[in-house]
Length: 185
Image (cartoon, rainbow, N blue to C red; front, side, top):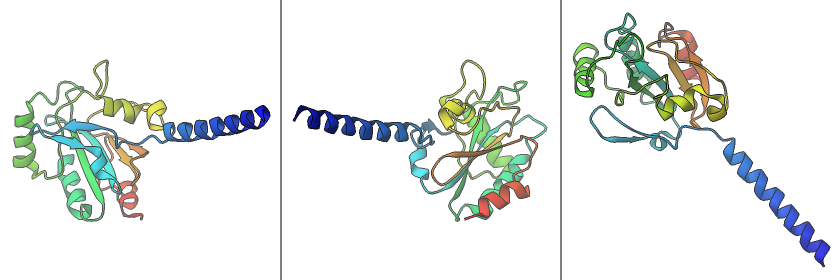
């Protein structure tokens, strides 16, 4: 009888352990909540089933005109389970010095940005925002270690909220490598 109880408990423990381990290995973005440029909470869990592009942005960068292509991509695919989330960051030569209100006005007035823009965050360094820790650390995202190289680096996440690709800042959002990924069902 003791042997049967022991075997049962051992089996139960192994089953429970494998379920816990598989849950820990399911690295996705859905547990994050952030604040948008207007002070409202944005929950990534609301994006389940959508492809997501996360991009760090800046208003005073040579790459700032990428806002135009980002908006074009968003307009083209926003009704096809795709979303772009912008994160202003001042980590590269202080090219995003403005307040959240100034950033919101700049994006709207100069590029007609309608995709969600979050509050300014740090995308590198000791004060790196937790969402960028997730995006840049393989131990958290399950895919790859990366470093945010510059403004307008893009992170692509699939419909399960899992990181699938890191795109160079200089690659435009209208590049075939991105548009084909968005279109691929």
